[in-house]
Length: 120
Image (cartoon, rainbow, N blue to C red; front, side, top):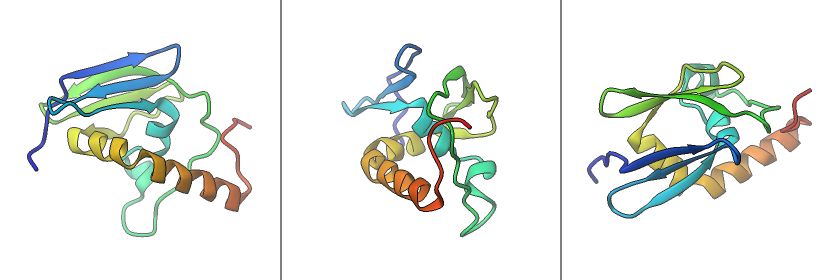
């Protein structure tokens, strides 16, 4: 499947949700918290298998900047100043398609570690 460039990227500050639509008609509403904890950055994903970091306490995080990166991605800057993740179009689609499963896995991991979505 060829990479699709989004036909729309719009951030709703009130709901802290990034809306992404693609030419094939798929559209996703991606909460900033979800994007932050699934950031493709090495800070979150680690540098190799098994190095992924569990990010807690980001329930109220928002996005303060959306910057295009070439024709293939956007860099999101979150209000906790995390800005090292480059979200490719393919990764945004993946996050949208897998949102339910990934979110449930994240919540289970937080519970297993005794951590919370709320800031300390």
